[in-house]
Length: 255
Ligand SMILES: Nc1ncnc2c1ncn2[C@@H]1O[C@H](COP(=O)(O)OP(=O)(O)OP(=O)(O)O)[C@@H](O)[C@H]1O
Image (cartoon, rainbow, N blue to C red; front, top):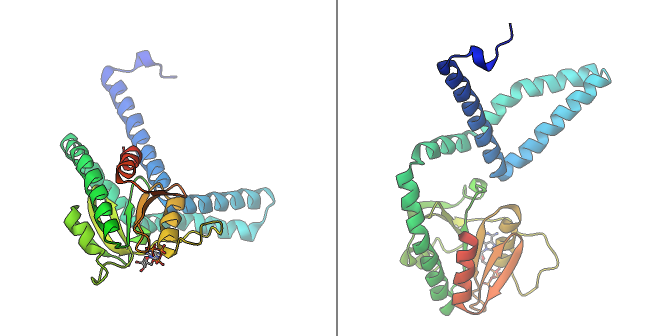
C-alpha cells in the first residue's frame, strides 16, 4: 500500500520532518567542512577521480583495476575519518559552543579587533618593525599552524606588537588570528609562485600573497624596509599610505 500524507499521524509526520532535517544538517556540515578546508577540496577531487576510475573499470570490465579501486573505496571512509580527525573534533566542539550568547560575545569583540589591528600596524610601521598577520576566516589554516607556537590568547596591541620585536624568539614568521583570538605565532606560510610581482617585495610579502591565493584569509603586512603596510586578499596585495584607509578596508573585508 502506498503511504500518502493523510495516512500519517501528526507524530509520524513530525518524525519524518526531523529525519529529513538531520540528514540535511549532516550534508550541510560536510559541505561546509569541504568548502572551508584547503585539504578537503583536494581530497574531494581525489575521491571523485577514484569513483570515475571505478566506473570506467566496470564499463570496460577491467577486473584487476576494479578490484583494486573497490579496496580503496572500502578503506576510504576510514582513511577520511583519520585524516579529518582534527577537523571533525573542532567541528563538533564548535556545534557545542555555538550558543546565541557566544555569538553575541564574539560580534562585540569584532569592532575592538579592527582597532587593535590597525593601531598595532601603525605602531609597528612607525618603528619599521616587519610583521605578518594572517586573519583566518572560513577556510581553516591548520596545516600552516603545525610548526608554530600556540598562544591562543586574548588579542591586544601590546601582545601583537611585542611578538614582532626582532630580538624576540617569536618574531620570525606569521601570527595567526583565529576566532578573534591571537592563536599562534611563528607560522610558516606558502609563498606565491607568481613571477609578475614587484621585485621590491621580498619573501614576507610573497608569503602574504601566497596564503591569500589558497584561502579566504586576510593578511596584514608591515614592511621592515619601507615602513609601509599592506593587505593581501584573494591573491592581490594593496599597499597603503594612510592608516585610516587601511582601517576602513579592514572593516570592509572583515565585516
Ligand atoms: N613563508 C613565510 N612564512 C612566514 N613568514 C615569512 C615567510 N617568508 C618570510 N617570512 C618573514 O619575513 C622575513 C623576511 O622578510 P624579507 O625581508 O625577505 O621580505 P620583504 O617582503 O622584503 O619584507 P620587508 O619589506 O619587511 O623587508 C622573515 O624573517 C620572516 O619573518
